[in-house]
Image 1 (spheres, protein in one colour):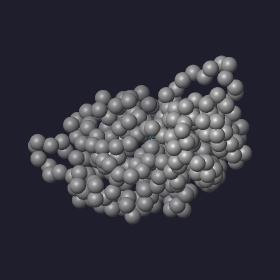
Image 2 (cartoon, protein in one colour; image 1 turned 30 degrees about the horizontal axis):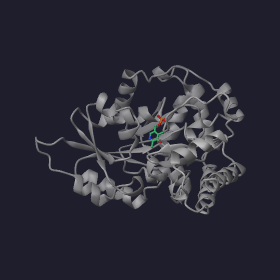
Image 3 (cartoon, helix red, strand yellow; image 1 turned 135 degrees about the vertical axis):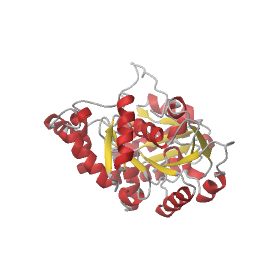
Length: 355
Ligand SMILES: *Cc1c(COP(=O)(O)O)cnc(C)c1O
């Protein structure tokens, strides 16, 4: 959802290498089998065994009292702010945050909240920047009620917030009487890259969620966790927004399968991202941001090719990447292999040579 979807030219060569997004993964045969075998019930009334098991697993994984299954990560973010905030309230987030740029204005449209964009390198603001953005509670100013971070920071380059920084942000927010929310679309990538558990990374955060349809490779779903009281209120919004489901265990089974089989392997995606970045950095004129997880951002302008041109020529060769905020983003995932990474570097080298 981070690129402008364009229908592919039917005469274009087959799409061979898909580096567009980790949302593009297809369920594996084993995952489909787990889905086919799923024991299901009515999720909306709390009777779906797979969904219930998944919620217990996620609450435990994130060290929270309870969790709820959602059709998407976006609905995790939207229901969370709807519970944390009241109309007119202020949320603080990095200026590149998904909640600002990529959720269709949901937080303004549905909640009447204003989000103050904070600056900072690679998708992360510093505790100092947060401190400076705080203002006293007067009737003139919007009430600052929520601080939100993305772990990992998507547009920042898949960058990881350090545990110390996260703790400091929680403590600043607490002393200002604010709640804290962690958009953990790629939290498990941070866990695998740092060796620090998702539970520790999310410790102290009032709400946190993970996405199953990104690097974990499930077709649908996210799950948000917090206190029992918070999750009860999230459930009310999920119901209101039409996110309550029926035999959702079919999807939850894929998510359970992903938790069992697709977490540790995220290390492969990270290794592929590092290999891709190393290869690209050897091409003169290509500027690459050192990847911390599975996202590689680069600019070919120094080689005499614009990002748009590079993406268009690569697409003709069956290699799909996305332009994102002025840079090219390549995303490694379950369906990307080592040879595909090498081939991609080869294509970029040829395109630069021909420029
Ligand atoms: C993808 C993403 C989301 C939204 O998740 P969906 O499941 O696509 O709705 C939210 N935050 C970040 C950082 C993301 O990358």
